[in-house]
Image 1: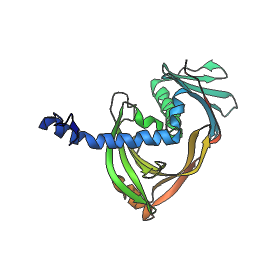
Image 2: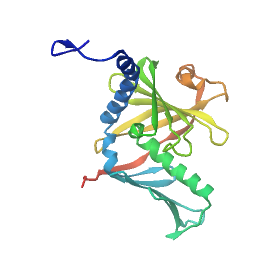
Image 3: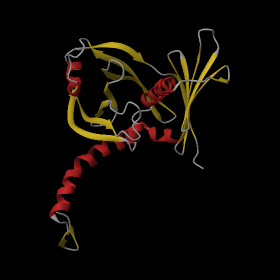
Image 4: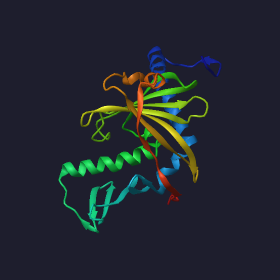
Length: 254
């Protein structure tokens, strides 16, 4: 035990036990903090960005906790559709006219826009207050060792899909987030496993694309060990998650 002024540090047994219980939490928070640091994602707390994902253009602006996420696309009649999600809520514009939406529609569009932004700028969000981290030890994938972190969410601040469960794998040497998986319960539910590729640094921020996989046979995979199913070829590619024309600019703090 560390000595202070040549005397034992005055911890009581209950305090020592509490410290031992907190050690895993400290360790996993350290992994997340390091991953955010090496990815450069801290810059996205005060930044503007834009990118193309499939048929839409996305615009990101975040400064001092205030955010504006915009998705721009076209209707079947080629009229411009602009979805804007901010701290104040969601608004849809068609040809610059506000559209009245039911709450169900608003929630659907909000979750869709937010989901794209969430995955685009991981692992930044893993430091949010609503995130619950659980250290799952070490895991080996394709011969490399990873920190395996399980993520769930508190109901308050966790969004409509707070019940979803995520797994993240961080390289033990350079803290790159090479794999992630999630189990969702909306609709018919399901699980996905993503493999990162095309890593590139844009204005100091690491951006990567993903191969999006799911089980070949529904309900045949134990989600908590989904990396084993990946190694054994029990997953198949469903789609590619590719961000194109990515631009990032930092916003100076006031």
